[in-house]
Image 1 (cartoon, helix red, strand yellow):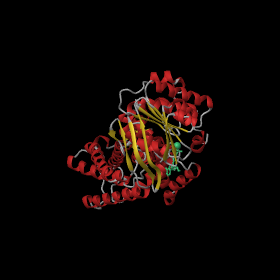
Image 2 (cartoon, rainbow over the protein chains, first blue to last red; image 1 turned 45 degrees about the vertical axis):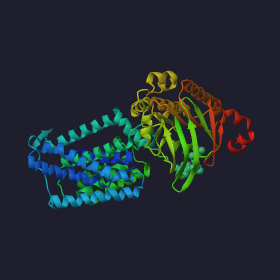
Image 3 (cartoon, rainbow over the protein chains, first blue to last red; image 1 turned 180 degrees about the horizontal axis):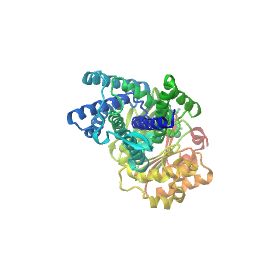
Image 4 (cartoon, each protein chain N blue to C red; image 1 turned 90 degrees about the vertical axis):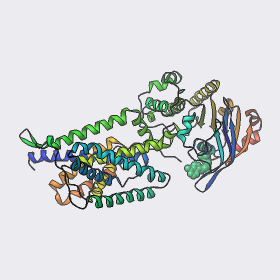
Length: 292
Length: 232
Ligand SMILES: Nc1ncnc2c1ncn2[C@@H]1O[C@H](COP(=O)(O)OP(=O)(O)O)[C@@H](O)[C@H]1O
Ligand SMILES: [Mg+2]
């Protein structure tokens, strides 16, 4: 691998990592706060991409898609949380896993009948369509924009979680939701908020990825599996964990495919197994207490 | 102010509380005593809504709260100092307090100044993570956090548990001061002397049933009963 291709792959790795972060952040917070393994998360990502595709086609504006697709998908997430998941919080993990898996399957079927089984893609929006040359190397502007956008979202989320009252409520809820409730925090509302926020982030990732990665049926489970690996490596309910683990998994995926095409999947799982051996709780897991 | 009437509480299939009733009037301190496993925490869990009773009723300020979600009780003015303290480890001391001030949405929560004046050690540790504190400091934080919600009734579950004698005495002084201010308290304790020193009324639980209720002096004179139900 020459230095040039290394730099290009590094850029691609960063792009993929930050997209992965958008998806995994919500999954990790939902898992950490609500103790729900949301297996429909990948479907919300793909739904975000498809809804974005349609909005872009109707209105001709990718930017409207980037804004409205996550909002629409968040509303669907709210409905799922309110009418399905909320009934199951007092039940075991198995019921929740079956429920979210079922929601994912239903969404996948709906997407297949609405958007068909073609491989779709979205044109790169005009102002970002092109390349800039840095140090003699051409970089696609859109990819650089995704990196900046992803970093800004990560920073915004970090400020939200670490510096605001709602963020403190979420952290308290991750530590001990029952005690947080006894202090007056409306836990059902906090769960709904985090679930909707998480699905919106996944959808945002779906739209942001659509000009560079194709959209197709089955992408939901591919993305879900990678995001689950990120959550396992990073630890439950931590944004920092999701961020660094996304970088690890995203880079491993891109460089694995470039250097060891036959073993790229293996590389990701080997890293996960290694982390699990050394730190079974993940790299950054928040301490949790669950009583009664 | 708080009336518990004939409650029966279960964990899954195991029937833990049998027909428990108790009363707490405004300004009163009621102690709930009993051996380990007697059902004291379960009584607290039933009142605060962690484990709703399957039968019986609980009223708070005249409203029926049986099975109400815990956060609504905090909004009504019920504060909890739980067994084991349950400090949020991802929050600093100050965040633990600020969160409590805001979460219950009440106006009469203790201000940070007042809390720091009462618990100077918490000011020194304001920026520390909640669980980096010593056991005694964590207990102070758990009490301060409950006061920050502005409770009219405070439920305290073994606030002296695991603390050195000097710190236990400090907790005792703190409870006496809160009582002088007119805060109603339901105090669960294994430390019988501490409980008797502040309580107006004492209840004794044994195997999920109330076996004694009355003035602390009566319990103090009845050494046979103390021996049988409290082991002291
Ligand atoms: N989460 C739980 N699940 C099942 N049984 C429990 C649970 N918590 C307590 N118990 C049982 O209920 C009984 C009363 O416990 P508890 O109320 O914690 O007693 P105390 O606070 O008086 O020590 C005990 O027999 C205990 O084993
Ligand atoms: Mg107990």
